[in-house]
Length: 228
Image (cartoon, rainbow, N blue to C red; front, top):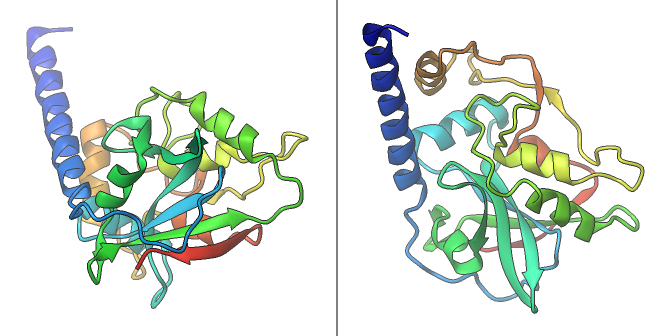
C-alpha cells in the first residue's frame, strides 16, 4: 500500500470510528430510571426498544416500520443469573455483549419519562429458551455488523436474535426477508448513503436479513409488558 493510500485509509477509518462513537453517545441518553414494576422477566424474553431521534435509529425505523405503528430500532435477549436478569445484545456501543439490566433501560429512549421498551415472549411449545441464550452468548465479543451482511463474523441486533432462536431440529424460529433500506417514499436516507460510502460497500438492498419491526410481528411472539 502506498503512503498516499495508507493515509486515505487511516482517515476513512478515523471518520468511521468518530461516527460510531457519536452514534453510541446518542444512543445512550436515558435518565437512569429502573425498569418499572409489573414484569417478571424470563430467560429468552425479547426486549424491543422504540426508535429515538438519532440518525441511526431513525434510519432503521423509517425503512422497516409501517406508518402509524410503534417503531422499534433495537432488540435484545433476556438472560438470568442467580435469579437476576441481564441483557445480551448486539449493540453499536459494544458489539455482542452482556449489559446490566438497569444500564439497558437507562439507555433506552424515554416515553413520558419511562423507558421505551416492550417485552415479548416466545409462545412456541417447548421452545428451548436456554439454548437460544447459549447460542447468543457464543457470539460474545463479536463486532457490531455495520455491513448488515450474513455470515461475516459480525452481528447486528436482530441478526443475533435470528441466529440464536432455533427449534430443536435447527430450523430458525423467525423469518428472514429481503432487506429494505428505503423510507416510505422510496428514498435512501442520508445516513445509509454516508455509512456505506465510508465502508466502501454497496448497500445490501434485497439481501436476506431481519429487523426489529418485522421480528416484533412474528406469530410466535406475544407482547407481555410495556415499560411506558
